[in-house]
Image (tube, rainbow, N blue to C red; front, side, top):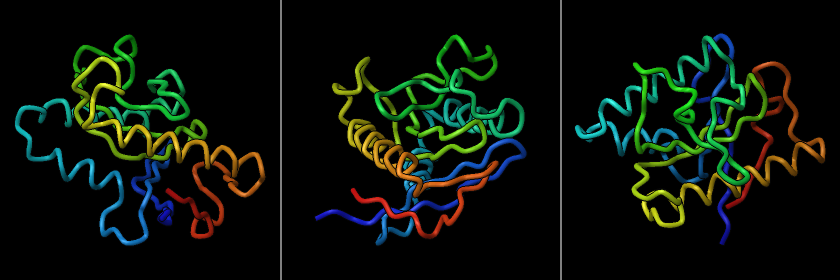
Length: 165
């Protein structure tokens, strides 16, 4: 049975609004789940902090330019590719799946610690990868049909957008 998924604002910065996915019966959004499950893992504390720095840099300084996202089928992922990272904010192993809509809007999903070169061989992130790609396809369809509209950093009629997974 498919579950209803809605969008909600996650974090707003001067250049970018980050939105997240929320399953109808869940208390936490997908992005909140990502941070909740990883926030107390000492071995990735630096990487998680650097990922937060990247979200802030994209949100405040750079905007959501595609060059800062890893292309992952229909969706994308953060952190940026190694070629775009600066020495002080390198992130290894973490993936936060997302869907850049414009240079001002990004939909954040969930993710985890990628344990293999290919996502298909990393069971701890594979489900999140599949979810993000399914949502990306639905959102793309809604945009093409004119049912997903946005202006600047804002998604119009946010509470009317319904996705299913």
